[in-house]
Length: 310
Image (tube, rainbow, N blue to C red):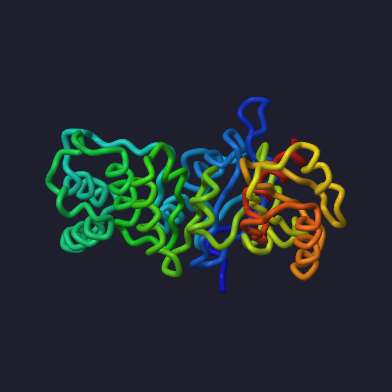
């Protein structure tokens, strides 16, 4: 399997400010990779360089084998993108906008007409194809942005916060469209919404202050950074501070956090050992309504890595 996106020792200065710090990353063909980091981490700057909207201070980047600086036209022909918040002329319709983008990309007229119908259907805007965009919701504009990214059927999609500012319904619509792309195209998805990334992507790259912190599968990250377990316990009566302190003193318990009538226990041990913990909590006189072993989450990994970087 070849690499669709290659970033090698990439750095970007804005004056004296270092936005990207010696970043290297390889994304294989048809992988779906989340690009995570807090606001200001360097996600948008990376994407602008990949899309030819900014130039690196040093290093290189390649799309489908083409250098984004020295072979910019060829590189851009391989990618469909959403960069920051997309906007369209409100007096145009989706058909008119897509026709305009297709002509810019020098698509064949007959091919363009067919592709416009296909992508409008793909993003579920067929009932709105001839309606002026000024009447569109934010979610509908995002779907149209995805349609323009797909129009020339590129092998690579680069998306900068495609669900930013959407309500739950709009986020769900965008998520379902992107799930259709999995296994068909290479997707590089920048976001700081962790739930969205975990539902769409298999791998994540975490950055902070322009520096790559870690790059792995979501499952691999969760296993690598959390050898123990998180256990959620719900009791009939809410625990007092002194009762929680006693549970914190039990064998293999690292930390106890209270959430309403539940407690979350960081536990250093395997699932078999968690059975002993259940017995110990009962022996302290608590009536247990539920006892659930949780896996570590991407959010746990993210927060830990960013805190360590700070």
